[in-house]
Image (tube, rainbow, N blue to C red; front, side, top):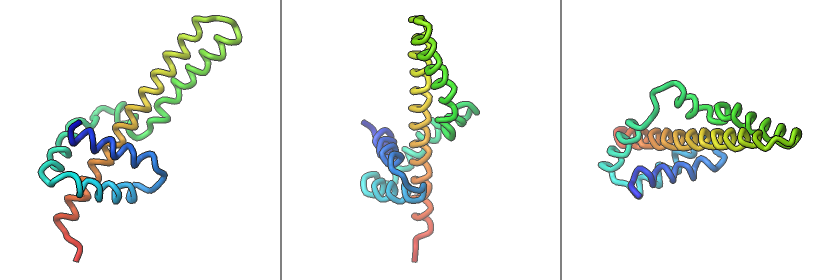
Length: 134
């Protein structure tokens, strides 16, 4: 596992905790500062910046993953409802497909949000390196 993937996993762990972004960045800054040297930090930052989305749909998924997945959860629920109520096994296909799409949208959004958190943390580390606290 490379540095980039390891840092993204660390950021995903921080996203699971209920706290402010500043607190998450502070905790990640300490972890990254201890485990990754400055050269590797710059390489990871460049890699993540190249991977970040530029199209509006993926940007929406990054910022509003639950909102983007909500229609597909609705399709999955309706497929389940119609499949049970009218005894139509083909309606369960909508449940499976809608649920899979919604899950993948939320997973993509989660990963993009973790990458953005790592980028912001690395920028914070660079800023602190440039202007040390007296």
